Image 1 (cartoon, rainbow, N blue to C red):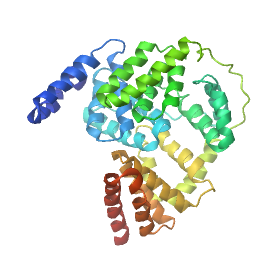
Image 2: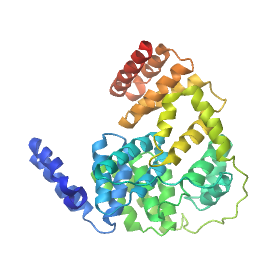
Image 3: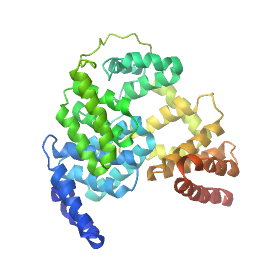
Image 4: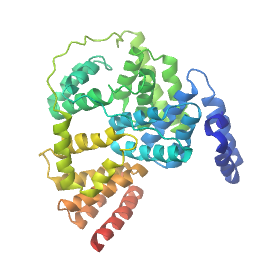
Length: 394
């Protein structure tokens, strides 16, 4: 099974592990590939897609992601599916995971000599996002429309973004079949942890789309390899409770009516212009270079960075630009994953562009110590130090 997934170079990482611990190398092969990946209920292409989905959410060392991106292609997966997984990751844990994974996909395809045309940008003008989102929400999860109305009482803005962007843009894309889409989101949510209600919602929606209980539980078994038993167990307990409620008719799998009252959404073009103007003021060339970096594989992700991050959110008047950038720095430093390094760099430079002082950047990171601990803050400070030194040199 390892040779089928890993191809010609599959023995190399095992041989490296054997140098330090033959038992550990044996566990990887016996448990990961012999006990889990060889199980029935999920085909190997789907398994590798779910593994990539989980690894991109973890956002740590790129080597496992690279191995399983190759593995997905080795067992017959299409590169376009990998790109679509990046769109789903945006909704679960933000743009950094997509930025990091697209870079890995690009490198792997180049090494394999595969040329893949960019995933086409959708032709819709965006004004129908609210309607599409409400229709999707009407059949989503456990009483999604009611929870949406309750959420709107606290933050109408968040509720609108949730409907229009997550349900109206990301979940209604056509690039994935429903089975792969929902199993991938389930794997992402379970990997991220502390998302029990969202996990219940997506499991419920998956069942409505015809995904079987065996396939859903199999996706949790697979997570024991890539996230460990504690994460997988939390997911299992959440899913088991949901299955019991479905069997007891506490949760219904019948779909709600799709007739919904909607309103026109703002067009993509207007959001893009506002976002591009905001991006130019805040990040200058750094942010624009990141946006442009998607053109060869997934130009729509670059467009979404502009329209959603900068057009929908960073352009809002509720906070000064400097405060927004400092909170973004704090957020990325708190995550502490390798996928955070590029965003931290972008937002430190942006904070300086909009008036933050080097001392304010440092104090923002120091303020995190009681909440995230010293290791994450040390990594962020090391990165910040190099950026601030470059800034002083210029």
